[in-house]
Amino acid sequence: MKINPSHISKAMEIYKAQRPTAPRADRKGQQKQDQVVLSDKAQAFQLALKALQDDDGIDMAKVEAIRKQIAEGEYKINPQEIAEKIVDDLLSKKRV
Image (tube, rainbow, N blue to C red; front, side):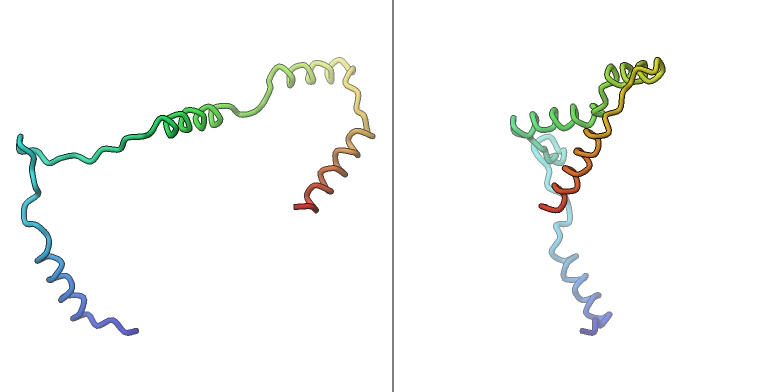
């Protein structure tokens, strides 16, 4: 489809002719403002979302405990448990 520039100018003239020349005003002479009102559920959702965004999901107490165990040489690695978790993760990804 080819757009002719003269059609664009005609469309703009029609558009400008349909626009009101002055904005409508309320009784005090000020233009009425739009408002957004959120429902209680939407407000609760925003609070929950903010709480999740603020929480980085890291349990610093657990991190410090493991760091201390590693530093003291007391942290034990269970290779069987690690292998099982790797296999479980791979199998769960194949099902999806």
